[in-house]
Amino acid sequence: MLPLVYHPDFVTPLPPEHRFPMPKFGRIYAEILHAGIAGPDQFHLPLIAQREWLELVHTPAYVTSYLTGSIDAKAMRRIGFPWSPALVTRTCTAVGGTVLAARLALAHGIACSTAGGTHHAHADFGSGFCIFNDLAVAARVMQREEDVRQALIVDLDVHQGDGSAAIFAHDPSVFTFSMHCEKNFPFRKSASNLDLSLPAGMEDEAYLAVLAERLPGLLDTVRPDLVFYDAGVDSHRDDRLGKLALSDAGLYARDYFVLTECRKRGIPTACVVGGGYSKDIDALARRHVLLHRAASEVVG
Ligand SMILES: [Zn+2]
Image (cartoon, rainbow, N blue to C red; front, top):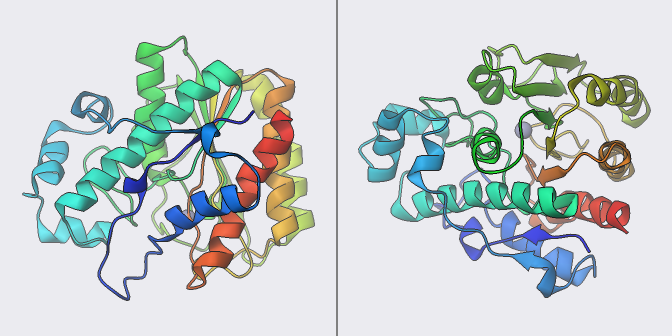
């Protein structure tokens, strides 16, 4: 049975008309239950990320400024959220969720959070709705507290994982792989260990062919003890911010392929939902839940 991670604090109020679809996290949880993908007993409640975990990746000055609200307005504008104590709780709980998903993946093979994937967060600043880099923090916590030496981030969000790439630029123990749309945020990209830039408008067949050509060899070369899979759905054709043209079936096939390739090799895989933008929150939640459906299928 697939272990899942959710906390009510994954959702926090934002000003009305804010362009970030915050309510989707609650809807993802509801949809997993509603669609019968998992029962309530499969959900695990994360602990809030400790400051010590955050500082395995982020500078103490940045961590302090964000946690205490002394962060300057310009830095918050770059993040794109208004600062609030509730947002701090939300941020740290989501990081805790990815840490817990990683631990559950090590114990059970595959585990999925219902948040996470804040890959634009750098060591000393946040950007693009990303404050702390949950993937990076969880990788370092697992290296310190669990039997993980080599980690691999498979980042299939439509945007490049620039924060993760920069954080691990000089740390070969976390391999960063990003497959994203070339003409999209961030416009100044950091170099991942492997970047595959795709042209705008790419559809299912071409996309899945690129993935099938590169992922198996990557898993065999890097031989990670743990994979972090960012299954962003902003590569969907109806996404407001993405510029690729995948269908629901294409996203499902993508997630199923990644998880099957990892499982075949016995590599534990922790999944996060990543980006996805739509005004239709129900449609967006269903799109994200393709990941949990595929994971549940693969686990059997
Ligand atoms: Zn994205």
